[in-house]
Length: 287
Ligand code: G1P
Image 1: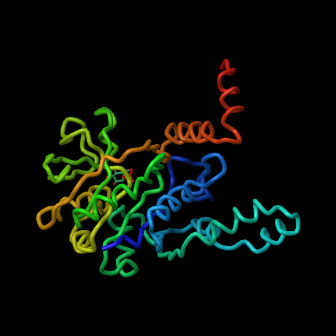
Image 2: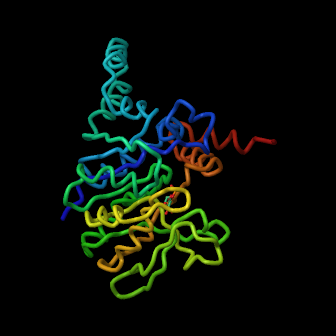
Image 3: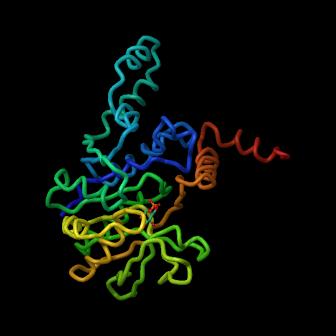
C-alpha cells in the first residue's frame, strides 16, 4: 500500500532553545531563510505524501499561519511586481493539505502519535520529527524508508551510527543482518551507554503500520510520565517484523544548539546566492 499520510509531532515546547522559543515555535526557527518545519514538509511531499497531520500544542499558531494564505502579503507583493517572492509565498500554501490536532499535554512522542489515530485511519503512515533535518542529494530521507516499506510491508525505522558517548540521547536498536536486510530485534529508549544494544540510533523518520496505535495505548508512561514510541515499537516486535534503514544523506540535529549552528552554516555554504561570499567571510574570521 502506498504511503499517503505523514504525522508531524510538533507540540514540543523547545526548552533547549529558550528564550527564542518562548513565543515562537521551535519548528519555525529558520535555517538561513526557511523554517525547519518547511524543510521537513518538503521532504515528505517530494516522497509522494499528500496528506499531512500536525500534532500541535499551545503557542504553535505560527506553524498554521505559515502554511496558510497571507492575502495581505500577496497583495503587497503583487502590487510591487515582486513575482518571484509572490510565487514563493503561494507555493508554501499550495504544497498540500494539512490537518491539525492538539496534543493537550506534553506526554511524549508515543502519546503525540496516538492523537493522530483517527486522522490516520487504517493505513500505513510516515512519521517525521522536525528536529532531525536530513540533507540528501539523492532521494529524500523518508522516500528511502518508503522504498524499504514497499518491499517488506512492515514498519521501517531510520537509523544512524552515533558515537557511543552520545548514544544515551537516542532510541537504540538491536538487530540482525539477514538477506532480508537489517531486521530489528529490540528497541530501547535512551539507554545508558553501557546498556545500549548497539551504536545504531533511531533518527526521526519512521514508516509505521496502524497496529502501532494499539501498542501505544497499552504502553505505560515512563519515569518522566512520557509514553515512548520506542517502547510501543519494542512490544510490537512480538507480532510484526521491523526493519532499519541506514539512509544516505547528512542528518543534522537541529533541536540542539550546536547541531542547529552546523546546519545553518552548511545550508548557507551550499546556497548559490550566498555560498561563495559566506565561505570567504568564514575563511577570513580570526575570532
Ligand atoms: C525521539 C525518540 C528517540 C529518537 C529521537 C530522534 O527522542 O524518542 O527514540 O532517537 O527522537 O531524534 P527526542 O529527541 O524527541 O527526545
